[in-house]
Image 1 (cartoon, rainbow, N blue to C red):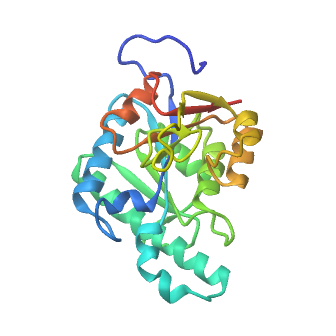
Image 2: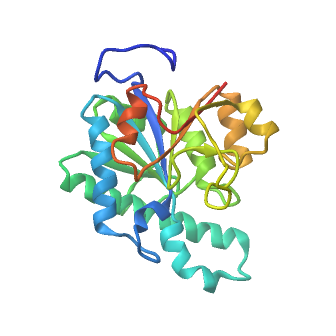
Length: 246
């Protein structure tokens, strides 16, 4: 189904999506860690689209936890620091799963790092089966490899599970021509192609993730997770945030 297709009111235009959540989104107004009210509000937004029948995979970052230990990681071997960050995403995944349980959702956490006493290992076929059963799948542990960001994990998992779009949840309501906090004349793009974003050097995702989405013809929609109802409007095909298309 095309991204501009007209649907009946309240009918999603996507059957399966990959939601990229940054760890920082879970902090709320706190300096680091997990703000319980904030995570409950985010889960409420996710539940609103799961209730519509949308199959949701989530890739979660770990910046909210790793930020608290980052000073101690100064000068640390990059691979070692990246593994610490991956473990932080597992902690966030468990917190997100529990918040979903409280909200009456069924979620499974799969990790690219093997921690079977805590979470399931990532198995593509099992993840797809969970999605088809209406369960939300939280992908933790990044790609399981150092030197790759959770943006890349989102692009990779999105392609692997056959998601129709990657929804990147941020603190900003889309992609702007400049930093809107610094430039009052900055304008938000409603739609932009991959090639246009590259030519204008717009930092949508890290370059590896962006190239993977482009090559797999996997569109990206950047929106604010803190704007109530924004996630639901995206899956209903309304203009929200910025769409990066092939």
